[in-house]
Length: 355
Image 1 (cartoon, rainbow, N blue to C red):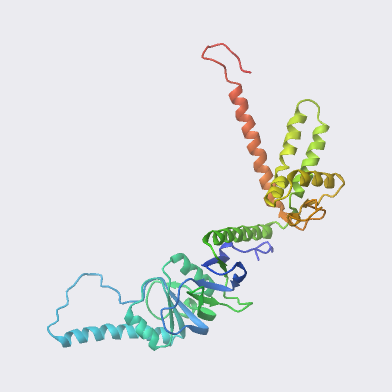
Image 2 (image 1 turned 180 degrees about the vertical axis):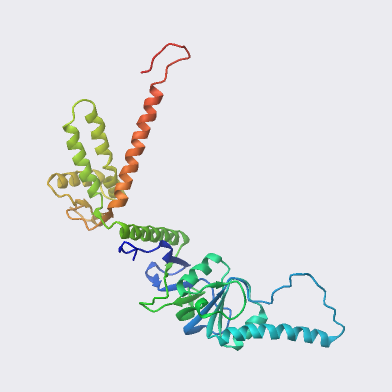
């Protein structure tokens, strides 16, 4: 809820994970985060898990100054390795003792670190993108750390179920939150399709829908869709043109006729006869059916007019008003430019007035 009491949400709270293969009907929503890669560890599931996110890799840090280590025998090499192992084990043990079950690294994970993570029974996931790390932090409530070590309670995240799953032959890691969880502020829509072009189209459709829902939270007013609003306005503007004297009536009527392009385009894309649909739609609105719109489901039905008297499609008032405003501004701008060009003097002489 916003400060004004109206419902609101961020478009970043809805993410899309595209997986090639399968059918559109296999797409689903996950209340949480989905990483399109598998876990680094052999353990693949954890429930009611505390999560820590590191913005760096889990490996031995390099020294600030370059130096040379002189080793005279095999014992020196063994002691050097044992010291490094002991330090890494202290770090991983401290993380495990804090109650962490899942580690997420923003960089590489060394084999030594992975060995101790396995020993202490924790899951490890590597995510290279800082944007994905930020989304994971949003989904789990964790804080990305830039230092290796045990996190404080405020820096930990929580997830109800973390598990690896194979989808379309590709391992993915799912951070799933229970319904009603107050921790997660992010949901992921897993899209499935047979081709990349269909996946891209679905992603664009979801993006449009999310932003439409966000706009509806700000202003919930709706108007009839399916070309009903444009056709009703067209008739009203043409009727107003009949009351205007002089040449202005022709410009007003042309503007009203231009609005018919929306229902005409809808009919064309649906495979319907544009002429018949437009004529039936004009007749319906002339008879007072202001909510009559194009019925795209009428394709292939014998005797169907392609018009629904009460359309069930609705558009956002805010988007429709903004589109009309921009169209009017564009038309006025073109007319002004045309007037400027026509008012220039013809030829290179000093005389001639404008047209």
